[in-house]
Image (cartoon, rainbow, N blue to C red; front, side, top):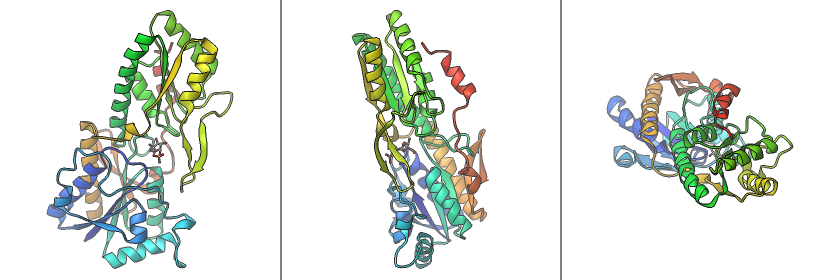
Amino acid sequence: MRVGVLTGGGDCPGLNAVIRGLVRRGIPQYGYDFVGFRDGWRGPLEGDTVPLNVEAVRGILPRGGTILGSSRTNPRADSSAKDGRSGLERIKDNMATLGVDALVAIGGEDTLGAAAALWEAGLPVVGVPKTIDNDLSATDYTFGFDTAVNIAMEAIDRLHTTAESHHRALICEVMGRHAGWIALHAGMAGGANVILIPEKPFSMEKVCAYVEHRFQDRYSPIVVVAEGAHPEEGDLALTDQKLDSFGHVRLGGIGQLLADEIEKRTGKEARATVLGHIQRGGTPTAYDRVLATRFGIGAIDAVHDKAFGQMVALHGTEITRVPLAEATSELKLVSPERYAEAEVFFG
Ligand code: F6P
């Protein structure tokens, strides 16, 4: 059996650990051989491959990014059709030419959504959930999230000390397009003055009241805001209107808008820090390395069991399997109850 592997969408710490888990289990245990597809769905669309064997995965466990490269190429988009063949037909043809019998797609909502559609169209595919956003409903955790939260928490800790020295309000913008998990966890762990998430439109008046209250204690406020958060009054978050091939608007800029507004309304100096891709970079935490490794083992076991159309998932402490279609049908959002726990510490 020859297994193709691809990593799609935004990269995330732990992708290499999954690839290593697949290969280190699949070669000695099942006698499989592997083909790495470059840059997400672009690889199988164009038949662009890299060798993937035990030698290729030596030393990659602690490395961030992905040795296979990634992209946001959408195989279902019209732009993926060529010479009268749809994206799916091109992928099927290339897999046949390369002798690839099964595909492991490691990705988030978009990559796995495409995997689900390709499975329905007859492609033998197994999914592995990744995203620093932790917003896939069918798994308790995705790898990459713990690393991103720890990076953001450390940044918040550092912002605290400089905020104190200068009596400033510091705003820390973290990733999170639809779901505020990174903001919630990093903000709670870092002792934020207020946490703003996409799930709950915020009142600018309340945010300023929290900020002023913290200054009264002679303690400088840190506001943690997810990039997709927006105020009750309207949508301020968009810096540009560029769309990716899955139709998502590029976000960013809410931190600066908040800083400007806080400064205007409270008269206190307010400055914004945007963590951006720093949250996706560098070495994975121990938690993410272990989860990603277990997902890799679980995914190749699923291939061996011919459990195609499934995604590996974490439920409690167990690695389980869920149908790909179910895995991508609903986003996991922060519940009002979880947000209420964080609110205890606002102000
Ligand atoms: O989906 C993961 C993620 O990091 C989101 O939190 C963020 O909105 C998006 O990717 C950014 O994508 P890009 O790196 O393509 O701008």
